[in-house]
Image (cartoon, rainbow, N blue to C red):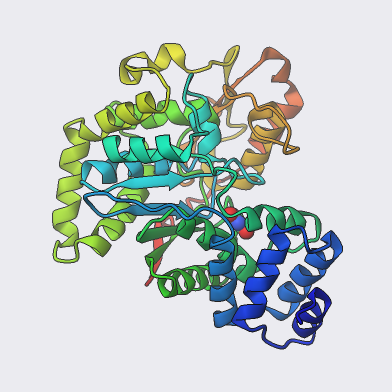
Length: 438
Ligand code: URA
């Protein structure tokens, strides 16, 4: 007979658990047969001793099977993207309608903000009427009719992750590559996708701050996902500067709409990252097409407004305004005031403390300090300068959007100190796409 304490002892003593033991543990966990202290002990033993490749695959698949696994009957490839999170990262909002315009189906299940990183669901919630919570039936219907839908996780998708994640949060066991792998991949597999591109972010605004850690995570995610019948590749991409010139929920949505409408030509980093991820994902399905051919097709779909239209269709199908592309300026929530924050001296921006900017947004109410917090969707920053730019005391580092009560000298000081300015011009900025893991 299996006993939870024996499984914990095995893992504590650095022995491998069998597939049957892992399956049983996850089943017991979801049937309330595991005490919270035992869950914590199991996680800590796994954090300390790590999981073998086989154990990771077993844990991922057992977690996937702990709830509903979506099945799709669609006339085209089913694809998705997952990002490990960053600041000003609105890739999903462009990539989903773009891949749908390329005749793929994109059932994207996204999350809320985590730590200093923003969440796609919070951004979309700033669109009046957009309903991120959908039943399985309506999610299936919208994906089959529109080609893409970005929604939140339903309660019956991977219930094991909900229990494990909340225990990890309070037992210092979040930062384990093995546990992160099982958590992310089990949810992606449960959404029934067959092709996945991972955007593993590295840098000052990312959860992984060095390339070694990012590579380890990317390799782990790619190998477990491929072993579980989902074709997967990863790009390791830079998150030193905020990816978009806007940070904050409704402000990021506005920027995306303007990029899609061709009105914003300044957000090249966001567009380049989105296109690189889209090309990798598309070529996983249509390997006979060259990257150049795919890139040309993508630009023609963007330039002709097809991607913008698909985005508008998705917004409307999910309960948002029918004509969002022409009404976004009126309907998106707006902050009381907008003020520029000027550079304190002349020189070159050598570095941006992107994580600190993300944390200031949270303090202004644009993100959560506690899971139950209601967020202010209108606050944030626009026209954030890029590193390498030459500035003087008349140049705005960014425009701050918020209620008047926020505009204090100490906040201005805090924002200014996120930008390092030096007389010496910095060396060429780092590439956006750092490595591919396949
Ligand atoms: N995101 C997840 O979904 N799970 C983790 O463990 C970390 C990030």
